[in-house]
Structures are given as C-alpha cells and as structure tokens.
Image (cartoon, rainbow, N blue to C red; front, side):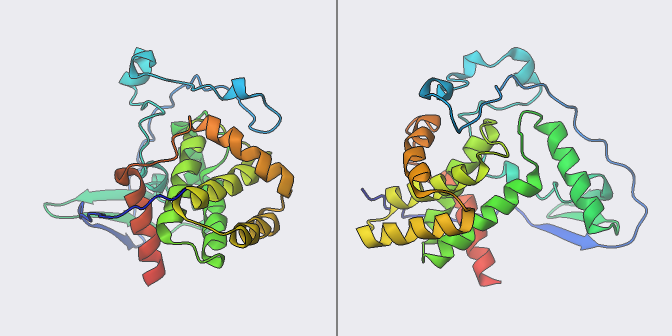
Amino acid sequence: MALGLSGFVTDMVGTHLIVMATVNTEKVPSEPSVACEAGDINVCNTTLEDFTPMINRADDIHPDQRLAGLEDVTDYDPNVLSDPQWPCGKHKRVLIFASYMTTVIEYVKPSDLKKDMNETFKEKFPHIKLTLSKIRSLKREMKVVGEDCCMQPVTIAMAFVYFEKLVLQGRLNKQNRKLVSAACLLLAVKISSDLKKQEVKHLIDKLEERFRIGRRELISFEFTILVALEMALYLPESKVMPHYRRLVQQQQL
C-alpha cells in the first residue's frame, strides 16, 4: 500500500528572529494551567477498549475547555510542540514590529533553560506525562533511524504526525514511549512506501537496536496504535508540510 504526497505548496508566515543578548527582561507570566480530562492510559498491556476516541466531536468538549483554548484532540496542530516560545520561557521578551518579530533572550544556563521550558510546557499541558525535552529527544531518535534507513523526509514527517497526535492525547508515558515511537515510524513507512520484505526486516532491526525493544512486541503493537489513531493514517498535506519543511531545513544546515 503506497501513498504519494505530491503538490506541496510552500508559504511564508513571517520571520522569527532570535537574538541572544544579556539584558534585563521583564518576567513573562505563564499561561494559566488548564485541567484536562484525558485519562491516564498506558498503551502497553491495555485492551482495545482503552483506545476508543477520547473526544469524538467538537460538541463533546466541555465549554470551559473551549474558553480556555483547548483544541479538540482531532484538530491536530503540527506546530504546537515545535513552537519557538518553548525554549525561551520566562527568560524572553518578544518585540513585534511591522514586518517581523524578534525575541530577545537573556543569558541563562542551558540546564535552567531546559527546566523552565519543561515547567512551562507542563503548565499548559498537564495531561501529558512526558516532558517536552523527552518528546523532542524521541523525535530525534526517530529521525536518526529514518535517515539510517534512507527514508524520505515526508515519511519521517508522517511518523511525527502520528507520534504527536498520541502525545497530545496523553497516551504516552515513561513505560511505552519507545514502543510508540518505533511503531509510528514503522506505520509511516508501510503507508507511504512500497517496501520489499528485506527492507522492512532491515527497518525493524534498526528500530530494535535504537529503541531497545522486542520485535514481536513491536509488530503486535502496530494494531494498538492503529486503533489509537482511529485508523486515520492518510494525512492531509496541511498536517504533514510543517514537519516536512523543518526536516528539509535541517538537512540543508
């Protein structure tokens, strides 16, 4: 089964320039914490009933959640976990001009910046069990495996969409994070490429080695991920393109 994603239309949504400087900045208040009703679902050792959609229709969202700005989990935003505000936290000051936006960041130790980023992320998404730094680390591991197996950027981008959808639904935790990451990559390859048996075997070997998981566990876990994603493996270009652009830009650096 193959899926051809063609006809991508690029666009420019402005320029975000980050300037590093030692300045005295005002403390930016963090966004109010919003309670989320997502269940504490462990992907491993669960029945398929645990993966029924958490919110099926926009009408099912509680009015307080709508007012607080929480999106329907089916309305996936491919930029929310890659928002440039996350590495800045309270150490930034954003200056908005007519044609561009500049962020001035005071000097801070990387460890303090990482801690502040994860705390800010936790306040906005209390239902997500993993820290933002861990989520990004898993995505880097997925990218490394994809590049080792000569995957196209669009295939890795599709895997990122599957992965982030499950993250934003609160499905991941410390125990299942590596298995979910590997399964998302494997599904993306199967849906977007026409692989031969030997190529699939090579990919599974790489996933086993990189994520330190079992082959049988990974293969049997694919259907669990399918149910969690509501079988929606065919993705609109608007959800894939942001990840695709970032991957291509990283390759050009």
